[in-house]
Length: 219
Image (cartoon, rainbow, N blue to C red; front, top):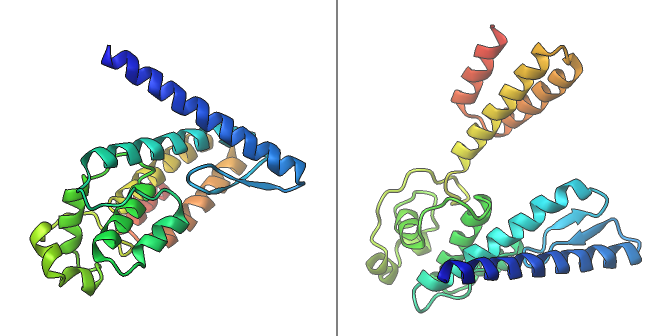
């Protein structure tokens, strides 16, 4: 019975997201605007790129699911999980260190597309031990007691978890696509993909990616 109720709830959320998304698209069309703002996450989307709509709607649903999960497991003092970039940054820059921690957690979840991610407690303990964390958090005695510093691998300088591994996995998939296009005689497409990969690698200076690219180039 609980599974049936959960499915009904998910269907209602998806229906509401789809309705709000379509309302915003129509508003932008009537106003003669090229962009709309996705509900809840407040991200700009180009109204003519309809092929991206299912992805954006799915992303919104994931964000709402992450907020609901956080509400069930978060400490009693925690604010509601922010979903938009603006709300996340407001929390990160507020004067309450406890709320700042939630802001960083929300930013990290958003970078993970509201998917696989450590729990709030594991993330907070890891942040307290991370060299990139602001000093005012790391030296806060109350936070140190509540979230004993414990190393958690995978932080970047923005305190987002798992970014490097996700970039590596994404780039590896692009490399496989480039290889298939090249073998199918689609030279122009393969070159375009190669240029995109190299631009991505320049942003993420990861030796593993460079080695993989060199390995493919030498085949």
